[in-house]
Image (cartoon, rainbow, N blue to C red; front, top):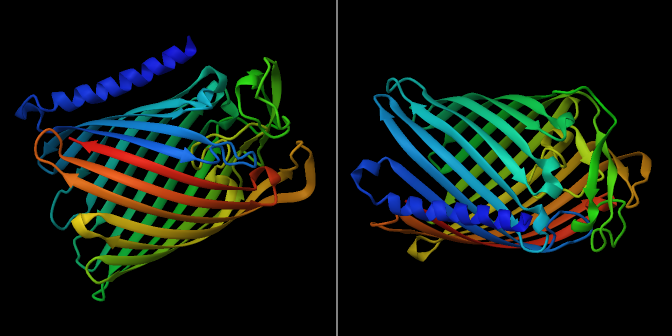
Length: 412
């Protein structure tokens, strides 16, 4: 019955997308209304990013509906965004995300900075087996962009984010950040972009040592740390699980920055080198331990960016092919120093050791956008292949991965 309800949600999501495409043809009254529908299929050889190397095929539909409200000084954009991650083999891991909001851009005079701002609220829904991952959020941002000079730009801005976990209130938090970004455009077809950011995350509840997630049915899940190699594959055992919350404090302050140097090589080729770093100046993020990780990148529960220091160097090469197709190759190396202890695969603490990861990533993307004139504005096709080697002194996070994804995007 649960599976049927999930399948119905997917049906409604796809039906709404199709209906929106055809409604967009109703006439000029909809000229300021648009829709973007995309579907990405991911062939992931290690879907949950750990030593178990559990493969799966994940379908990720995404729908954006928007309406533009022009005004004298700019425009407002009202939008709805619905997305899902649907796992073929580990269907209990499926989740859905819905959000509503508005964004705007305002320019009061040619010499004034352009103001970009927005606010959105959303909620993530999981299957009942993983509903303790459910959260709701509120995001707001405002930037002032000084771009009235040909050779440089400058942006200053701030952002606020609230995230509330219904079943894991120890992870509910508020985050404030401020950033500066400067771009320099040289006559040699070189571009330099420097960015700095300061962020502060505060947890709503006081520091704790552990939280119990009650009555978890491990029989329907993939294995996690300490559950044994055959856990989750058969049987109907259901029991409360003690889940460690590694929480050095109730707040954390972080400084981050990046430097990007890009260079055009002729009219169809470009390359770039990027260095990123982040340092936790006080405190550290909270991490959920004892559970199999989620699928989202930089997930608050399992790999919160506030939980580690980072140094990363990457390089990318982009080539415009015939018929305006775009080909990109990139590689990245990063070192991540976590402020969290290391456990062996049975869940035993290794005294005096903190987690340290060395990550190599290589990927390539081929993308082609086909402009259209009638029902659709454009169709975009994409193919991506990624290789990931995550070396870690924590055996649970020592793994490799190969990912192939195929994407289709329709814009109206």
